[in-house]
Each structure stands twice: as structure tokens, then as C-alpha cells.
Image 1 (cartoon, rainbow, N blue to C red):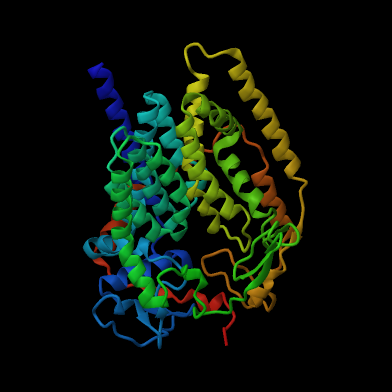
Image 2 (cartoon, rainbow, N blue to C red):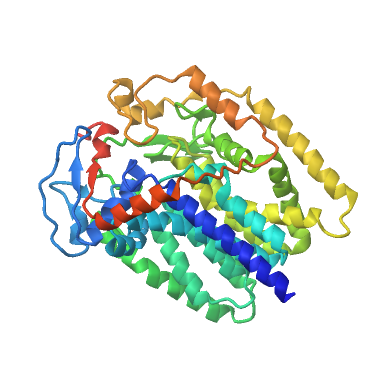
Length: 494
């Protein structure tokens, strides 16, 4: 047994070292697009390092000096404004110590480390529930070696969010739980992604169904969460004048951001985002996307996992109730609120598809449960048959969706009038000024509905000599030049 455990440890270490080196090599830099600028800029400002904001042509835009203290470094209304624009500051707080000690290499290090730890904590969490080495390791590798995650080569707050989610789920499946630590991590996650509040029902369910010291556990959990979220609340009050505001709803950000009418039954409201049906009068899709979001997200998951693993996910979902009803309900409460809030949203982008990382952990657990169900010593024939039947249904459904079509969401062009004027430049994100291409839409649709049976494990690693050379250069560099992306996306608010 000891020899077997030692072998398992060696295999795990080799796998995780490979993941770390692979993602270290894949990183495209801290200023590849405007999403990573949300992390890069405030992280450097927190370490009292200024950034030279430039136009696309390389012209410096602002003459400013940092006050040299927080939070004043992060707001200057006469030049760069509020440095986080409409994004959450939590990711930048996490990134700041890495840049302080490792300069620009800190961004690459954080990117690779976070994804490696996702795999590690998924392995530990699955092994805690299903003590089978093969299932735990394979699930953890699928979590980080799938084609979708590997396509993300930049700093992304949802990747950082997935790390905290993986760590929290590991701590929550342990028999003895440290509720104060869990509360602190939940508070930190809320700073990275405010939408993490949607995990609250799952935490409350776990607190109320775990052990006899419910009052003590609740006190420890909420105390930890409050302590961790206090700096974020202070920042919101300082920057936006409201501790409860979601930053995307701040009305004085740069750019034209109209609010659109929405309704549901007898409830009518205005929102500066774009909800789809049933909050909109009909089903629509974001321009340049062949499907509405409620199809794009599940099709992306199916494409990444493949038909077989997705069918194991479906059967594993039902099998989870046979294993442990409380555990099954907890995972549903973790998954459903987060999934529901995103599938009804439009104004979509390739970057926003990464929101699926905030709810992908429960489906990965269900994949593990499906494998456990299938490979039990006395697995019945009907279990294999159920996986085959679900696989056939999935293939048919995916292929039928290739014929799906719906109207373009005209609200998008109201939000981004520069797209109609052919003035909205491609600057590292998928916002485009060119008209929709039928060929491009068909290519996307073909990719999402190809119905691959197995996951696309896109293992790619660049020459380590180049990686180490880049890393040495980045350790020596601190100053950054960053395009001020916003002016190329939004119409002038005035």
C-alpha cells in the first residue's frame, strides 16, 4: 500500500508540474486585452507603480503622478478616472503582491499557479468524496487541460474565481470544517467576483445541515466573510459612493451605457445590460455569435468535455442522489443560481464565456460520480446502457441545434454605436466594427455542434528555453505601456 501511495504521489507531482510549466509557457502577457487591464492596472497602482496609458499609435495620453498612498492611487478623475472601470478590484488585490516581488513576471507566475492549484484542489476534493486515484486524477486533469481553459492565455478574474471555488469546495467536503477560514475565502471570492453572492444559498444549506453547532458555525462563517469583504466595501464607498453597488451599474463610468427596458410577467425594470427572453420580448442573439447565450454556454461545455463525458455528467447527476442526497442538493444549490443568471444574458463576448468557470465545478463532480457509477465492481448493465442512451440523445440534440437560428439583438448596436459607424476597433477583445460574416457564424456553429465524442485535450507547451528567457526579462521589468482600450469601444458619454 505504501509503495502504491508513493507511486500515486509521484504521478500527481509530475502531472501538476507539467500543468504549471505548460501554463507558464502559454501566458500572452498582462496587457493583451481590456479584461486583463482591469487586473494589471490596479495591481501596479497598488504597488505605487504608474502606467503609461497610450493610444493605439503609442502616444502618451495622460500626465499624472501617483499620490503614493491607497486608495488615492486608484482614482484620478482628471486623467485615468477610476482605474478599475467597471470591474471588480479583488483580482488586482491578489495580483499586487506578485507584481511587488516579481515585477512583470508576477503576472505570468500568478496565471500558471492559479490554474495548477485548480487542478490540485479538484483532485483533493474528488478524492475526498470518491477515494479512487484514477477518477480523482482524471477529473482534475480534465478541469485544466480541456480545450476551453487552455484557450485563455491572459489574466482572467473568472480563472482566479475558479481557483477559490475549487479550494472552497475542497474545504466543504472535509469531515471537519474550518468555518471561519471558509468564510474568509468566501469574502475574498466575493471581492474577485461580486456575483459570488449567488453561492450563499449553498453555504447556508451546508451550515444548516452540517453537525450540531449550527449557531457557532454560522457565527464563524459570517464573521470571516465580513472581515474579508470589508476592504471591498470600503473601496466601493470610496470610489462609487455606495457600498452595495455592483460596479457595472455605476453611472459615471467612461462611455455611453444606455439602460434598456426589461419585463417579466408584471415586473418592469431598466437595466444597462441586455437580458434575453423571458426578460426580453423574444429570443435574440448577440451579434457575431450564432447562438443565444443559453445555448452557447452548454454547447461550449459539451464541446470541451465531449459527448461521452457529458453523458457521464448527466447520469452522474442522477447517481449523486443515490450516493448522498444532501451532497447532491448542495451541488445543485452551488450550480443553479450562478448558471441561471448567465444563461439569460446577452451583450456577450468570447471573454464573457469564461463565466462558465464560475459554475463548472459541480458538473465536474457529476462527471466523477458518473465514472464511479460506471466502474463499480458490480455495475449493472443498465448503467452502461443509460450512458449510451444519453450519448445518443446528446448527439441528436447537438446536431439539431446546428439548424437553430434567431434574430440579432439590435440593442447591442445601441450600446456600441461605433460598430455601425465602422469606428470600433479590434483592440484585444472580440468587439468588432466589421459586419457579421455568414462564413464566420457558420464556422462557429460547426465548431459548437460537431458533437465530438471525447474531450479535446489540447496539451501545448512552448519551448522552455524561450519561457525561461521571457521570465528572466519580466523579472527585471516593472514599467508598462498600456493602450487605453475604452475610447475605442464606447461612444463618448457626452
